[in-house]
Length: 114
Image (cartoon, rainbow, N blue to C red):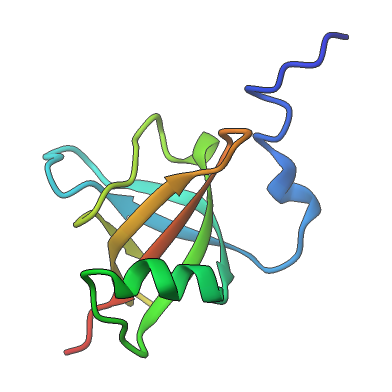
């Protein structure tokens, strides 16, 4: 079996705890939202806060997500796109960065407060 770095980590969410199924909707996509997107909530790091503070205010509703690319249906998260958790809380993407091994997105989102 040959090691393929593009797919080797695609399903590793199955071996982790705290994985949730969310829904993803690209802002410029008229198609159906992508359901069962594998997401893990993370804390904002000091580096995230520093990066966000350059031109963007930080709010208490900001959250960092690890999002498995293989579950996004071929879509790429960008600023303005939306995620929705199992409780139907909507989150808007502030930033999205693909990790080095290109199977997980680090996505910073902001909860929509009504």
